[in-house]
Length: 220
Image 1 (cartoon, rainbow, N blue to C red):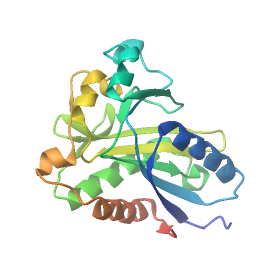
Image 2 (cartoon, rainbow, N blue to C red):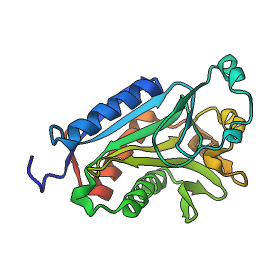
Image 3 (spheres, helix red, strand yellow):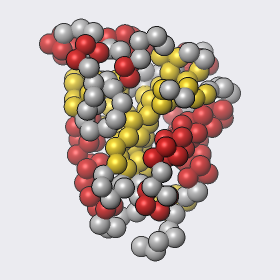
């Protein structure tokens, strides 16, 4: 693989349990570290799950964990940054396996680029979104519409990425302190638009904006 190669592989995984997706990411990171594969964008949905980061506070899950199974929600620990968050049907998740050695080893720029990807995609749908400097993610007014959480290994290969609320069960967010932020809300594209979102069009918008923001070309 040539050093100047900016191609990436796009994979649509459909609905995947969190643990299976985490294992896939881990294998991809190892292969990317050895330059056996190119950069990858994985797009998928998860079954309902609360994911706990390395720094999640125990009281940020607001109900007994033993009660979550009754609601069909599992709990998984993970190695990304941030705090507790929710993934589930109606939420588009993007996991990015990318070699940052070819992008200046700049984590702050990488996070800003992920945010810009979402901001630009929402603009395609007529939704004006913004950043809040002290809270990574993408916001519409005072409500979060997309979360950003990443991890980077010693070889500067990324994993995890973003989750965009298209039409998830927003009530599930009330069972946690989303991303550890108590004074702001959560919203979705459907709540803002008042109508369903075409998932295929949204996915293509994500890919198009990913290529533009990161200067890549898709091959899958």
